[in-house]
Length: 355
Ligand code: COI
Image (cartoon, rainbow, N blue to C red; front, side, top):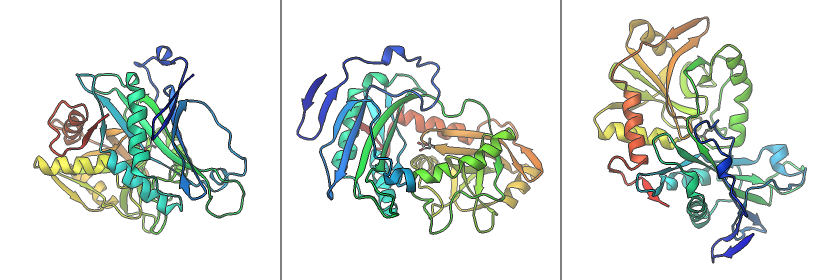
């Protein structure tokens, strides 16, 4: 192994690469990881020097808080390669900001920008051959932080580990997305941790999602916990509804994740004269729109899922199939967003950051 030390990050390079074993045409989301990972520990009230080293398992004490109380947060980001072989990140400052908001909510230490952004750029640069050219090819980036301090007392840990791992990725969903509208389970409640990207927000969805999948649906559209009348998010994505020529999405709140894809689509829509409103959409409006034909499209938006059209939804005993439409706003917005990410269109907002 070759050890290289910069003033900011220690680097231990892997002796060999797994890259030639990877079938980049047939990737299942989140299963293959690159050769290196970034690790940075927080001890005695401060962050230590980060190290990038070969991707490998590591030991944690069985009593660590992450195992017992789920004190863990993460982010989802992507790197893209343009036609000139340059590699780009998309709005990494937004992910840093949300990561630190999640950290505060979960009583974890905030991460300094030089570790998060500096670490990100260094490791993505090292792994740039894992970022393939061509629309749809991405390197999914998973920064996360776990509580590694030992002891099962239910109090915040005093020790944490921040890590970045990278996974080449294409699409998140492999086929059509049909959803069930939640009547009983909810994703988040006011005062809870719905706005944080906390690990437990996602594992709490596994059981209702399993029930939905047993009935042939891929995801759930969550409704508000208090009344189950307002549409909130779709599984792992923010959700948009198009009625006639206007698209609607729930406003961010303590229950709704402030999605980077969500806010980017809203900005692009506003820039390009597509009518968009941030307001709660009611289940009753959705049913009425499906019946009278004013409901034209539903789509999810997230880093992993990008923009995923939803073809139909089940509510109580009834299934509503959406009409096939030309000039889909979901497809138009997806196209505009991805062209910015791959540097195929002008980045009017200054969102892309070169690695
Ligand atoms: C993302 O879209 O990056 C997410 O974090 C969702 C995750 C469950 C894949």
